[in-house]
Length: 480
Image (cartoon, rainbow, N blue to C red; front, top):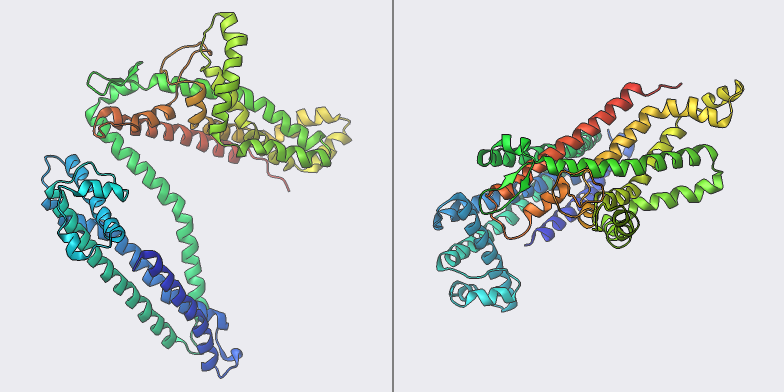
C-alpha cells in the first residue's frame, strides 16, 4: 500500500472515530449530554486524535528510519575506495531499484522476471522508463535487487504496523469513553502541544540550516585555509588546483549593489509612505497603495530581464559610453537601480504602517501649537516613527543582500574590486549558485566554498535583522 493511501485510510478511521466517539458518549449518558463531563464533540475529538496521531507518528518515524536500515544492509555489498564513492554508488543503487519498479509496472513483469534481469541490457530499458543511469554493473544490479526486495518487505510491515496501531488505539479510545471521562482536557492538551510543535518548526528549521552550513564550512576550512579565504583579495576558482578563493571581491560587489539599491529605494519609498499616510485622500490611497505593492509580487526573474533588456543598455548608451566609464550593459548601477525599484514597496509599505501607527493626538497637539502640516510631518511624525522606519530599511537591506536573479542578469559574474559603478561585478549569492551547479566534484574546495559563502551571507543578514529588531524595540515609542 502506498504512503498516500495509508495516510488517507488513517484519516478516514479518525473521521469515523469522531462520529462513533460522539455517539458512544451520548449512549453512555443515556442520551442526556448534561451528564457528560465534556461536550459530546470533545469525546469525538479524543477518539479521532487517538486513532490518528500514534499511527501517523509511527509512520513518520518508520519513513525516517527505513532508508537508514536498508542502506546499512546494502552498503557492505558495494566495493568503494572512499565514503564519497560509496555514497555515489548507493545513489546509483537507489535509482536502479526505483527503475526496476517502474520497469515492472510498464512491462508488466513478474517478480521472477525482474529477478532474472541482467546488467548488459538493463540500462537502455531503465532510461526508457525515465531512470537516469548510464550503465548498470552486475554489483550495482545485485545490490539494487536486494534493495528493492527489502524496501517492499519493509513497506508491507509498515502498512501492517501502522494499521494495527490505528485500529488498536481506535478501539482503546472507544472503550475509555464514559460520562466522567475528561475528554475536553485531553483534547485541549493535544491542541496545546500541536501549537508548541508548530511554533518550534521555525526554530528547528533555523537550527538545521545553521548546523548544515557550519558542518560543511568546517569541512571546507580543513581543505582550504581560513586565513586565505577571509584575507585574500582575489576570487579565482580553477577546479584543477591553484585556486584563490578570497571572499572580499564578492562581499564588495554585494555591499556596493545593495547600497545603490537602498539609495534608490529608501528616499522614494519613504516619501511615498509620507504622501499616502499624510497627504493623499482616501480614494487616492485606496488605489495607489495596492498599485505600489504590486511591485512586491513581480518575480525577480522579470526584474532581471528588465535590467538586461531595458535598463542596462540605456545606462550604457546614455552615461557609461559618453563618460568613458565602460561599454557593457551589465554593471553594478544596472543591478542596483532595478533592485532599488524592487525594494520600494518593502520600504513604503512598512513605513506607511508605522507612520499610521503614530497617534492622532500628536498631530492634533502639533496643529494646536500652530505648526503647519509639513512641520508636523518633519518635527513630530517622522521622529516618532523613526525607529520603525530604520527597522524597515534594515529589513530591505537584508532582502537586497540575498537577491540573486537581478544580479545574474543585470550585474554580470565578474568578481573584482572596483569603484566604477558601470563595471560588471557579482555578489555572494551568484557565486553560491555557480559553484554548486555544473559537473563538479562535490568534495573539492571549489564546491565546498559555497557553504562558507552561505554561512557568511547568513551571518550578515542575521546581524541586520537583529539590529533592526533591537532598534525597533529599544527606541519604540509607547503610547497610551
